[in-house]
Amino acid sequence: MADRRGIAGLGGITLALVVLVPLAGCTAGGDEGAEAVRKVDAAELVHLSATERVDPSQPLTVTAEPGSRLTDVTVVGPDGRVVAGRLSEDQRSWQTTGRLKAATAYTVRIAADDGRGGRGETTAGFSTLAAQHLLAAKLGPDSSGSGVYGVGQPLTVQLSEGVKDPQARQEVERALTVVSQPAVTGGWYWVDDKNLHFRPEDYWPTGTTVSLAFEATGSRISDGLYGGDRAALALRIGERVETVVDAAAHELTLKRDGQVVRTMPVTTGKPGFDTRNGVKVVLGQERKVRMSGETIGIASGSAESYDLDVEWATRVTWSGEYVHAAPWSVGSQGVENVSHGCTGMSTENARWFYQNTRVGDLVTVVNSHGKGMEPFGNGFGDWNIGWAEWVKHSALGGPVNTTAPVTRAPANGMIAPQL
Image 1 (tube, helix red, strand yellow):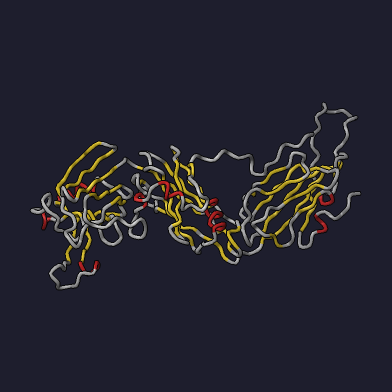
Image 2: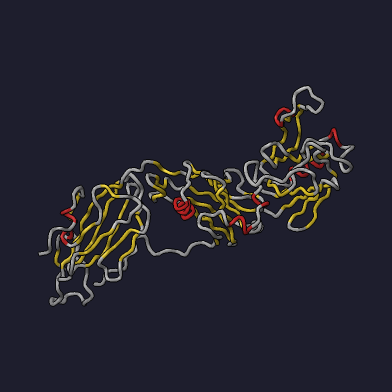
């Protein structure tokens, strides 16, 4: 009889013998010479690598005792989900390939063959260690609205814990999956210890569908830090809408899919309040917004102070730069720059611009005397960073192709038992 050091010898593992219903043989029915399937205690035929408390970052292995083979292994969590796994070619061992959650109880169901005509099933249980800290990820953009964005929209990840260690950052990037149709070449950029941005090498193609997922459940990120719950979002990219504001020519030009749609006279920031040069991305739109000079450091009551309601406002920086209606400066629009940094236009033109742009569209300012748009922190200045420089800031050190992953084998990775 096999050594009973198998599952029964594991401390803390609960076992239950399950009777295997005899399987039909391959010979014709009624053949009295066919050898009957003999029921055995499968607990004596297999061994688990698990102890009472399992590190969720490590795979669970089931091994058959000498002369025996595994015919089926299934690991199931309390939510009923099967953990993916793979059987070796010789059917002597099976190992999880899917992730285990921390602080979770699992059930293992095993079927085995003793190699001498005996077959049986057994069940075991184990629990994973609790994580000291779980790493959660808040994904952006928020696609709770229409879910349609402009071609300049970056993907963003905000982590619940700071990640500084280079190897830990690599684990985070491996847990982030971007899939798009059509596929593009893109890359991750670590803005700081808690924030990452993803953008394509060039702008998203019109009509692209994009999905982003964080799947690190149970994975060890660093000492005491494990991946938390899965997070995911999906969005679609609309038409390619690009706006160029020429501060020297006092003119705004909007193109859709490469074709000029409309050119309008504007006014931008006057000396001392010059509009930022560079590529910006539409952050939001407000039908009416209250603007006050005090929010940008202008003292109330001074010669430059203002406090008024503004209509048809399209925001491009968090510090308060908008494209908006400025009926008070119509006489200067197309002639000179008189604003405090925003791009002003007539009410009719501002309404049209508001209605023909969306979050994620591109607004580029050229020929201003202002400083350059900040890459991060004041909106999305991501496109002002060259591609070669961008990919240097990935923890994995290279670009990402957003092709959908190849469909994997069935969850348990088993092959059909031979009868």
